[in-house]
Image 1: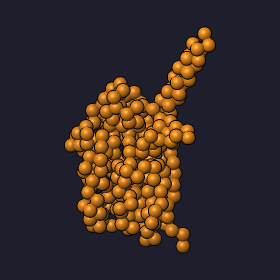
Image 2: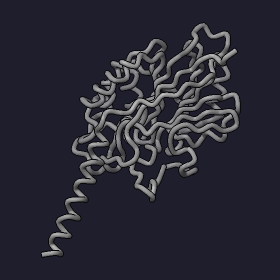
Image 3: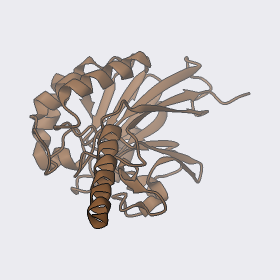
Image 4: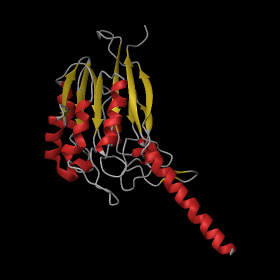
Length: 276
């Protein structure tokens, strides 16, 4: 009987942990905030709010389009001036209870509101599913895809790297494109791994892909950050050589619909002018 009791307690504890990890995965994303004194002194605005969203991974059970619609409402309430989405819009995880088309997955993003526009790059899952269909769905949602290209948006020069893991990243082409635009350079990338190779003129880079480990166990940490640099660029804010990197944990999940020690989040980055 003692052995049976131990087994039941162990199974019960395991189910409780799984339930908590799933509940964490489907919880409303935390809005993390950072203020950076990077705006040019001649900018017409005293400050500008950039909202970073990434790794949405639309699929059942944890991220149906209905949940994404609620997150879009949460994002709009922040009143961002610019929204940047750094890839992995869909998911193909094995335990998915439903796989949505790219059109179904991306449609809720059409309701995003921002003064200067919504911009996106593709992630590895988008390429694995169908990159051309992802671009069409984003265009239908009035979201501009930056494929190793750049665009001016108010006082910003926004560049977008295509996905590194699937071999579509072209840093040289993207930097050249950013050189033809005006404003504070901001680089979007699905993976953070390009960060150490960027010139110092790229003051800010935003990325996802790592999920901040997604499952980070106490004392053990994360099994993987899906980065060649391990935990170095795994999560949050990194400052190196005068450059700043912001890495979001993302909104959805990959492989398993579970999160431990890495809650869903999105980043509100307030850019302001340096103090006189």
